[in-house]
Length: 129
Image (cartoon, rainbow, N blue to C red; front, side, top):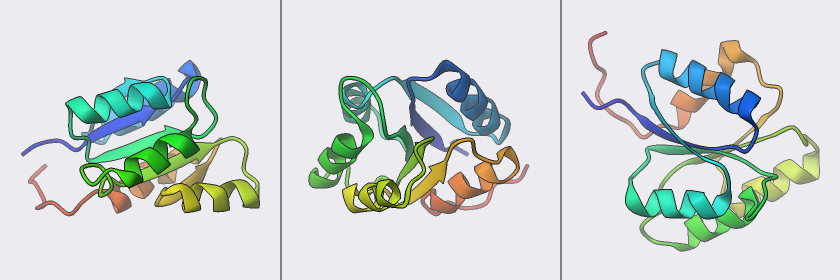
């Protein structure tokens, strides 16, 4: 059975370490890029099951990246979860309007993080663990 492939778009090493650790411990495969432009290139060369993306990054931010992914017929069905330390209501609303399916405020709760990610993964048959 194929492990879910999560594309993490994050420019902070500490955040990346925690996210990668939690997702890999849950049996997911993690691919990492540092900004929105790299995300678009990675999505073109692979098919992630879900994208977890920081909103405020250099080169191309998460808002613009999500909008571009939503405009492309090949990528609009990929769930995108926003993650940001800038947790203000208008920021969350802008993320949802940009095409994100969920918003996780940093710092997030490691005990509920993986369940939140799993909730947005496309349906797949249960595997024996």
